[in-house]
Length: 543
Image 1 (cartoon, helix red, strand yellow):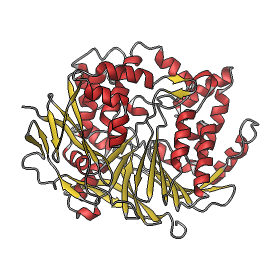
Image 2 (cartoon, rainbow, N blue to C red):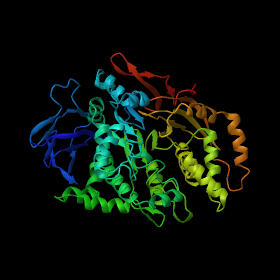
Image 3 (cartoon, rainbow, N blue to C red):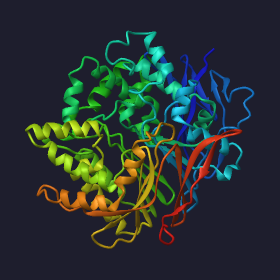
Image 4 (cartoon, one colour):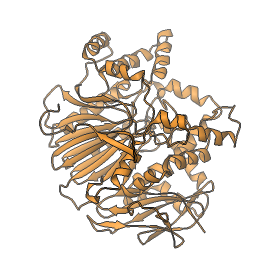
C-alpha cells in the first residue's frame, strides 16, 4: 500500500480555495477534504498537489490525507492538534498575522551540529502554537530563502552521499543531482513539529543562493567559472527541477496552475516527467535578450495586504555587460502588480533592499570597481565573491529602480510599504526616508536565520556597519566617483541588530501594523521563544 513520505504541506490559501502538497512512495490517488488527484512521477519519486476549490470564506476545515482511500495523515497516536484549512474572509479589512524568516538548517542528531545551529525557531513556534487557540495562529508563513543547503550539507547527509558516489571528486559532499536534493528536503521538512506547522499554516516560499550554491549568480565572472566545471550543469538543473516540485508550484493559485503549461504537461504525462522538467529547467536559467526564461516571482493578496515575492537569484541579468537584479520583463511585472487597492504592501525579497550603511556603500563602490578591466577590476571581483558583495546595493541600477517604485507607492494611499528579507544572519528593522515627503511609512524588515550558525566574529562587524560616523566617511568616499549618483533614499535603524535564531511576526489591524521579533532558545520542556519589544510601524515613531 502507498505511504506518505513527506507532507502534507498547506500552500496557497485564499477565501475560496487551497492547495495541499504531498510526496508519496508510490503512484496513487491522493485525497484531501474530499478532493482527489493522481500523483505525478519524477525519477521514481511521486508527488501530488491537491487543489481544493469552492470552499466557504472564513471557514475552517479539518482534514486528513488518504492514499488510495487509506488515511496516512495524521500519524497514529500523535497528540498535536488536527491539521486544518482556514480560508480568508471574503474581502474587507481583517486582522492578519504573517510569520516570516529565512535560512534554516535541518535538525541534527549530531551534538556538535546541534550546538552550532542552536534552536530551530520554526520548531519553537510550532510547539507554542500547538497550545494556543486557533484564533492566535498565523494566517500565513513566508520562507525567504535557503530552505535547504545544497552546498553546506549536514554530517548525516555527507555520510549518505559517500555511500552512493565518490565524494573525493567534485562537487564533493555538496549535492550533485536530483536524488540528493530529494534527500535535503526530506531531512529538512520531516521533523515532527515543523511537519505539523507546514500542514497547518499556509506557506509561501522563494529560493536564495544556498538552495543552489553560495553566491549563486553573483556576477558573470562567477557564472563563467562555475560553468567551466563538469558537474555544474547537472547540479543547477537538479536545483531548478526540485525547486519547481517542492517550492514553486505551491506558490501558485488554482487559476495560475490551470494556465501553467509546465504544470499541465507534468500532471498529464502519465509517465516519468523528468524530461519535461529538465527541458523547463534548462530554459529557466537562460537569458533571452535581457530577460530570463521563466518568472518565479509571484503575488498574494490577503484582504487589505498585498504580498509581492521577488526572485532575486535566478532572475538576474549578467551577460554582455548588463547587471540587473531581475530582467526588464520581471521588473515590469513587479511594477504592474504593485499597483492596487490595499493598505499595506509587502515585498518579499530574500536579499535586503536596505542594509547596514557601511556595507551598502562598500557594495556600491565595489560594483563600479569590478567594471575595470585591469588588475584592480580582478581584485574587486575577488573581493565581491569573498565578501558576498552581491545584494541590492551591488546592483545599483536595480536598487534605484526598486526605490523609485517604493517611493511611488508610498506617495499614494498605502499605510505601509515593508520589504521583508533574510540572508544576512542577523535581525534588524530600518525606516526609509526619501528626497521628498511620502504618505506611507516605509521599512526594511530583516529576519535571519531561523536555524543556522551566526559567526561570532561577524557580530561586531555588523554593529560597526551601522555606525553613522563610519557610514559618513564611506559615503563621502563613494561620492568621489563620478559613476555613483547620490542615493535616492536614506534610512535609519529602528531595531537591532539582534543575533541568534529568530522568527518575525507582522500583525496588521486595519491600517495599523507592528512587527515582533522572537528569539529561539532551549527550555525545560522543549524549544522556546523570547519576544523582543514590538516595533510599531504606523502609530507614533518607533523607539
